[in-house]
Image (cartoon, rainbow, N blue to C red; front, side):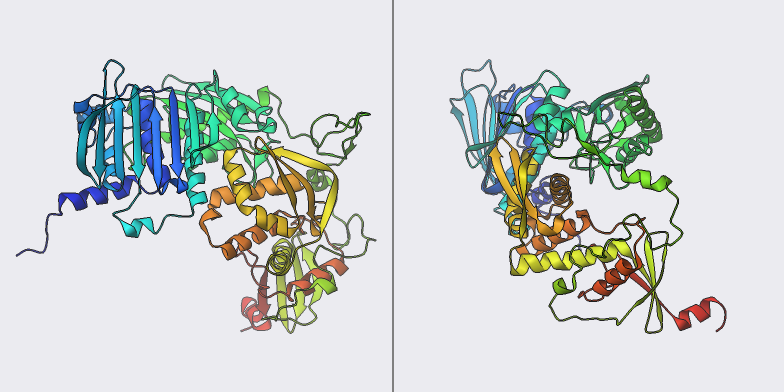
Length: 599
């Protein structure tokens, strides 16, 4: 008997389901796409326990009759395509006929549907892909689908689901993307039967963006438009001064389908040329209308990846459109304003947060690049001040047992205002000053989180900021750790928060931007599903990186450089920063003799 066997139909269905349904958010994505294909303009999503217990999607779309309802649960049953050529002219979200049967194969599914012209509807119960009952039922027009006990018959898949909050954030992210791509549709999301997010129907994309994001984003929107016979680009980008630490604010849609595209993201950034600081990214809400024959959406089961014929042409058009939009609107980075808001006689604040009638202007750090470098590589403006950095005081050095200690490193110089050159115990050390300070800050923050609360510095006037629904979920998850670190954060309702205190060691750091950067980092890396100690390390690493640490291109006093290096070698892991980059390169006398051909 041969070794190769035909797999049973039930096993085939479970394997196929695993390609389409990875987590609760996958279920929501597929069901919402079906609702949109059914021309629904009101869609309600309910999840319980992050979607692990229940996912319910209700719409007011076209609905289905009994025959179509039964057929929809069969694999590769679809109304979207009829022949091979149709695959290359896809206009709908779904087309393979895999979504509903895949969901039914890994859950206890209930389908309740009625077309508007019918007097009664159809209710179907399916368990693990097997239809258990079909009956006539009274219901409103449209469709409701419930998927309960997800992965109940695949324990190996179920155990890999993340925390309830983390899975809910993924569902929320999915619905937010659909809301941006379909402004005319009313979306609602319920978490354990409580309204968690609401996206009312809008007349324009700009209105939808303003509903989701804060005034900083909506006020910085720049319209973008570009057309060729086969490619049309429209939407909004933000002015350079409104940016993020990563690409979490970038949304791309091709023929109304949300996609992920590193190539388009790279082209978007390229269009900003030198208007953005290094490591910062613009927000974008861009729609690409491309001839159907040039787009292949049949690349991956999740349909987030597409293949575009002559993609370079699309990239070039996007770069040119971004450059044109920015220069037309004369949007350039604004001068940073520092100062406390003055109070009116009635006690109310004048203007928005961060503004004042008579502010003091602080020159941009970029202006320092046009100054001549000091003759003494260790001198800099303020050279007479006593050396000192946050956490570098001798009384604040970590008290844990050290795994490494280098005695009395002697500073020889500084290269490119970024690297310190030192000598110790017959070795030549080249130290990345920014990475070194990150390591010192990281270990101090970890010490605070693991042992005691950090002292706080109160703000005379609280700083307020708005978060979208996803950012709010991340904030609430990490709030206990942030408060232990010394932040005073208050939920004012309606997605608005205030900061009235910050850790004393962050004096001089703008807490609003630091917190937003931290939240966006957490969103991108999806740290929500990690254990508590991993979350602590994530918080410490992000705060260490985003705080007012020693930067590259900063000239240091010799005393400060000496203090920095000494503190680095008092840490437990002096040779790497919290993100794994090296802090120090060591060259021995033997290494140098080999390089110079002496050996």
